[in-house]
Each structure stands twice: as C-alpha cells, then as structure tokens.
Length: 296
Length: 162
Image 1 (cartoon, rainbow over the protein chains, first blue to last red):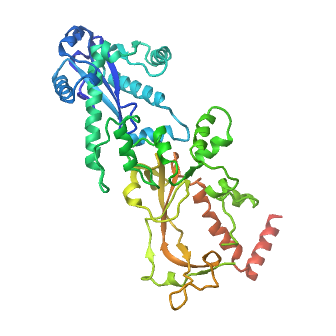
Image 2: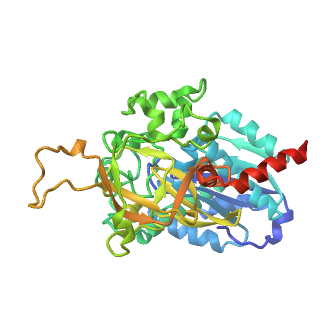
Image 3: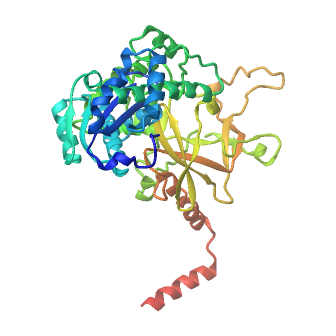
C-alpha cells in the first residue's frame, strides 16, 4: 500500500524520509513498517501538521491525522504489512531470521520502493533497531547516496518519523480489525488488550484461544516465547529442523536449549519416530527412507 | 504377525473416501485422535508450479509449509487401517483378548491422492517421499515371473555386447 503509484511532481527535489514501525512487541497481529517522505523544502511546514509520536495520540486523533496527511499533495507515504504468519514462519524457518533482521529488511524494502518510484532521497530518519551504529552502517552501505540518522525516540524527535508512525499505527489497527472480520468459525473475541505479552488481558485471551493440537489462531505469533510457554503441556510437535539444530554445533544451540526446557523430551527413538530412516538397508531404501515392517 | 482385512475396501459404500483430505506433515505430532483440522489448517494454492504440479501453502504451529497434492500411481490405493473390533457377537469384549494384543487390522477409509508438505522448501521430484514411489516399478520388475523368452533375450544381449 502506498500514497500513489505515480511519481510525485517534486520527486526530483532532494527529499527526506522517516520510517517507523507499529506492533513490533505484541504477541499477535501484523508488524507494520510505515514511511513518510517529502521535499526537504517542505520540512518547515511539517511542524504545523501537529504530528506526534503515534503512541501518545488517541485513536480518533491518529485516524484524523492519517486522513489529512493522505490529502496532502506534498507528502508521500508507504507501508509494509508483515503478516503474523510470515513473522512466525521466518523466525521458525530452517534458516531463521530474527526480528531485528526482519525489521531491517522491511525498512530497507520501503526505502528501495520509494527510490524506485524516482524520488530523490537524500536524508533518512529511523528509530533504533538493535545497535544504532551498526544499523546506520548497514543502511549506509546499502544506500550510499542517503545520509542516515538512526536515533532513539526518533518518532518524537523528527516530525517526518512521527508521520510515519501514524501511518504504521493506523494501518496495524485497521489490519487487526479486518482480520477479526475475516476469521470464521470458532468464537473469537476482540478483547485481546494491547497485544503485549505482559498485558493480563492479552494473556487471558491467549489462554482462551489456545488449541491443544494447532496452538493458536493465525493472528498469533507462534515464535514469541509467551506462546512456547503456553503450549507447554499441550500436544508435542517435533520438527526435523529442530532435530538438526540439536546435533549441529555453534550458533543455533541457544534456541535448542530453550526448546528442551519447554518439555521437549529427549529419547533415543526420536529420529525414527519423526521419519523412517531405512536404517541397515541397502542404499536404495535408505535414500528413500523405506523401511520394512514385519511386526504391526 | 498381524493380519490386514482388506474386504471392506472392495465395497464402495462401506468405507469413507478421504481423497484430498490426507496430509503428510514434516513433523511428528504426538497425538492420535480427532481434531478440527479444517478450521485451523487452511492450505492455499500458490502461484508456483513445479514439474506441472501446482504447489500449495499452509501454516502449522507457526511454520510455513509448502506442499503438493499427488495421485497415487494407478494400481495402488491408500488405506487407513484401524484395529479390527474384537467384540464378540453379544457386543462384549472377549475377555481372553486385551486390546494391545489384537493384531487384526481392517480398512477404515481409503484415498487415491494425498498432499505432502515440506517445511520451508518447495516440493520437487527429489523429495524422499516422491522418490519412495520408485520402489513400485522395481518391486514389479523383481516379482514378475521370468519366462524362458526373457532368459533367451538376456543371453543374446550379452553375446552381442561381446
């Protein structure tokens, strides 16, 4: 989603871009990265639009500001909505990407999209994700023509980032509402609170919507520690990807240690339970994992 | 040694046809029993086609699965087996036969296709599961009775090469 597929008239003027995220911490719903950009010459007028960090604004005020900024011809915006299923899938993939990596990729994807539209970006403002200096270097290496400012509380320091945070927050809130309309079947209520793992209302909602085999509805981020804890004691599911980690050495050991503390039993028969190995048979059978069954 | 009673398989009406409802997942689910699968497991057709087979996408326990629905080779069928009921004519369990020792199986359902799923990799001809189908043609060749003509043909072949 973005302001306009057409390149704005002012695209060839030097422009600045602000990027911010909504829904990074919550255990449910999409994570949304939003950006706002405009000519540097317009920067002074930004302050008069009363953008503030989206978290400090009431929902109605955010919606109002969002509708206004969409009408402003001197502003451009775009969002990247990362579905909770995509977040879990990447964090639990065979080659795992952590949340910081996903966040970095999303922000860089937005910058690339705006550059590809033909907008001359010269300055970019972002909130910290991980180590600020490492992040700044990563961004500068990828986009050498842009001057990057990576700063804590960027959303309250720079109006362009405040604008981006409004775009991101409003998009996330709407996506959450739409998801609830789309999901059919079992009773799912809206009372999940803030979505943050520490929120008692969120905890109650998670427990209410837990399923012993499938875990949670698709809105929930399975890769969050809260989910692992809650599923302890439910039906155990063992994956080949985790199996390899256990026997492998080095970097991925940390995650495995965590898994075993959450009720993954170690037993000798385990690999054979996951799949037949064709052990002790001719290579043809081994390669195809075909086993002979004489007792059943 | 157990026995498998396939008689029900020949009667079209007596057992359920589970075609397009059988899934093989790349994980071990330590659970046996009914679950509301259709409500939670929602495969979607993807745009990717490999070797003429449309691939599908689904999620289970937060993992992304990529799969394909394949027909079983002609001449072969898939069966769901369950333990044959060890009840006597009066509907009472035969005292002499605890359930664990009952090794008689019978067909409860059948299927002629199934969907197999990979975790994080697209289905391909090289997947072990599809490669296990190679055994069908090899088994057929191995178990085919050898006729005199075959032997003659082979021995001629050998001579030609020399």
